[in-house]
Length: 171
Image (cartoon, rainbow, N blue to C red; front, side, top):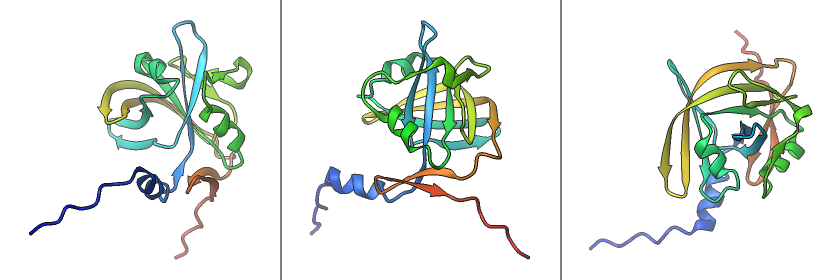
């Protein structure tokens, strides 16, 4: 006699997901009129080095959903520790425009935010519907790194934190 497992409670699942520490990014793109927009995302991950592929996920209720469903490219901006205000700004509801003086154009034209740890210019390869989100799989076409930018911004159990540079390996 088998017993059915209890149904998953969404609040418990959200708490369990929150125990996985992630980095914090702002994904940016330009609309058809050329205006830059951004969205905070912690669902970013690398997929492959050859070819260079990355992905991130966007919720189907996001205010930026239509933009990222139609844009052929985007930039993943990896935020440094201490940049919680910018992460929260781009996580808010409504249109999160990128001001012209806070970015420069990547080779694709998508905005690269100033003061980031690193950035990746990405050409969308595939959009995969997965439940209430869409996975955006893209090829990295250009990237940059600011080695002087310090530690990374993390998100763990609904709070921001810091990912420190690893200690040197002795040996």
